[in-house]
Image (cartoon, rainbow, N blue to C red):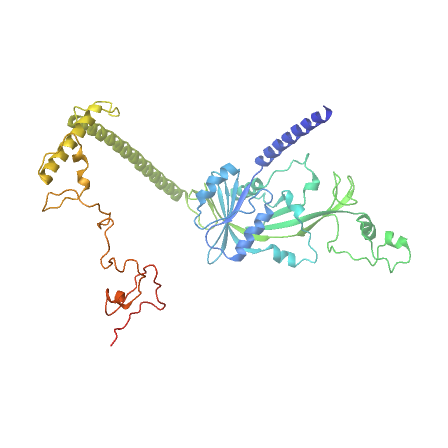
Length: 480
């Protein structure tokens, strides 16, 4: 009983944990990263790199076909819980990026000034830190210099914040933070720097030799005279990290972090290693909705208040005309439906006038009507028999019901004869040319048998007992 109770409790705990995980997973934002139109292989690789950044809350293996339109993605975004679209496109002069909030927008249009792929960034590093466990949790978002005046800047900051899950600083687990995304806004050029880093925490306040011992790595001590030199100086030791620790990256950890020596309330240094991709973005415009809405901001074109009002009036007139057309179409559909019903009623009344003796229940069989039909058929057969034979049919024998199956000669009154095959040949009739003398002889035994059919040539027709000569049809020449 004890084991069964433990199993039931484990099952309940597993079900509740799965339920909590589903709710948590559904509450965070999800993204689709895809392209529209023709793009090159470099932009296609950039899309895969951006999907890597947005993991795990993105569609890693999203397949896009040429015939897919934006409505297809919007229709499946709701059931899947997708909240943002990141759309790449390419023109002959530039690469563009659109970030849209579902389902009603807004949509931010960016121009990709320049970009670098993951393979390009990693190739410049002496030693990179990138492994699959870093992508099991979402990255930490860092926004820099987005507090300047301007509604479009605040809207950009809000959009980027909502693309990543929020973090509760009182409940967050520091061991889950392995990556960070940095967005830096340059007020002078109006460009946004996009960077993706791998995060590592190492203890400080000890020599490099002690750090290596804490990490279970044996340092090179061939040039040391005493072990104290390792603990105090740590000379002649190689270090792969080129970054120097200082006040800019040293902090006190509120929790114990993964890695030897990273204890709570101890000084540790946070080190960042760029793993890519890298992009430089510039905002072009902001529009309402998922496309085709009002322009909220444009970096190049500026309109006066009068022009804006004129555009709004024109759009209102277009919407009003569209509603009127739709209303007229609905009226036409209803009118056609009423006309079909009237035509149906009219046709039924015409059928009743044409067949007044028909009963209302037409599915019930009428044996009297069948007898009348059979009688009419019998009268027709008897009349046909009289015209063809010249005699009255015998009513005791129903010969007029089946005499049409026999062939009647036009010049004689003889109706019955030898039975015929379906092909018209008489049954058991002897073939011409076969007599009692040669009936039992073998075929093609003498020359007389060949001459009966054709004196000049003999053309085999595949009869049994005779094989077709090789090389096609061949004839026998006449003897001179």
